Image 1 (cartoon, rainbow, N blue to C red):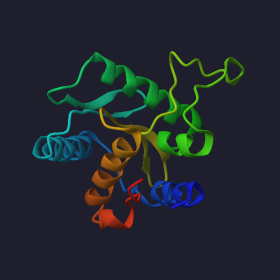
Image 2 (image 1 turned 120 degrees about the vertical axis):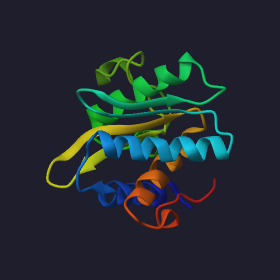
Image 3 (image 1 turned 45 degrees about the vertical axis):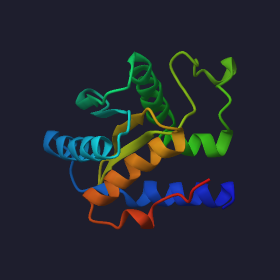
Length: 163
């Protein structure tokens, strides 16, 4: 599949995976489902779910490190600033770090998959679901699959094809 096709699919994900509401219970349900999957599939990941003003769910599975939490922080910043999935940034720009002229210091922003905007109908993007620990495309896929499942969609309808 061409990069343009992947970009179109990520845009479809962003436009379709919109929650009716978001609160602590939704964050816990999403995060718990991802953790259950991670344990079943032996994924070494960090999961962070938040609104822009506070963290609502965080967990790390065995095999992760402080580096994963740092990647999460930088992915969250990227989603918040550019208002799109961090993996879409990879597809649109490549993985080269931001230049100093972009005003997005690489110490605080990263172009890497795994940050997905949490959108609420009528409110827009209010936060981020972020995964770190797998290759970026897979981090993105875990987030998308969880949102699709929570919304009662077939996750395969939103899955990126293997590279």
